Length: 418
Image: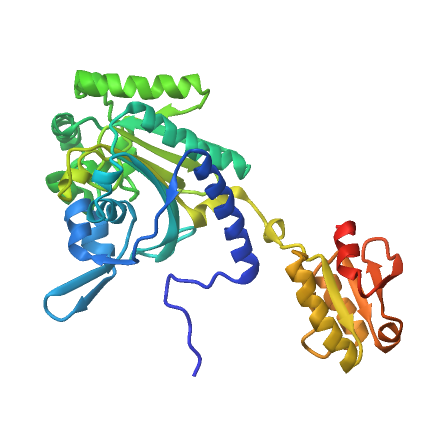
């Protein structure tokens, strides 16, 4: 019986997986520069965590969570996003007491039961950061600068940073009233879902991608002075001034919201012109309400996440860019040569020389073809005649030059040539 992977989930095969490792390694090196530490949380969390943090009217909670029931009292969910899980870990492990302010990063799969689309499957992957324990606008500016740094390191061009402020809880109540007034005369142009959102959570209308809704949203003329309090206005001004000082280009987008209820004050999204309608490759912002909402102290926090699949599409990186380079292939003829070659292979690896050999009993011609496919720098040819002389023939695969090297000092000689 043949089995297939579940709908909306895919295998990441070796060549592509190497590209993922390349992106992850570059991101981790930058996180280290900015003082972020790694965190790994379970893939399964209590369903109530997401109901509480994301909002029961959020699309993710209502329609997209993969839930796992165990008996009548236990309900878990495959994590649809990581921020709530990170905050849960922060509080459960008392990091709010031992390290009031901490910077964390994570890499891993997320799950949403939505229609699979380009760059967004039901199992997708995030690389993200969360900085917990600060309400400083300088932190907001830093995470945006960090996101841009990753894109620059990956040589991603053609992206746009969209920036907005939702203000505090009081500001958001004002903004909701303004939106209801402005949208009231356009309800007949909005989709059925947005007519429901208008009643329950009008912010979700701004985030709708259904035909017609973005056109209505584009006509709204929202002004920060109409709803931002003086404290939030000052906070947002400092964020923008910091970005200006760092020469980070951004566009103000007063209708930008995030699809989750916990966001406040600064929100941002990074879009890419080559991805079509679903063009966001990263998004995030500040979520000062989430820590107290989950039972912790009144502490601010901010973060963002890259969608790895979309990041790959935007980067244009080819699998060849991450292809590992093997240094040497040992081609042997005869059992004695194979035995000696196998021992030599381990010595090379212990000396940090990337090495490979034949495990398919191929002919010498077949082994040379395999070495060529692996793009090795050298091939070590070892047969009965070479064993008698305690020598190895070393072939430079680029120049074609061959030379004999003593078996006893072969590892040292190879290291000199690399």
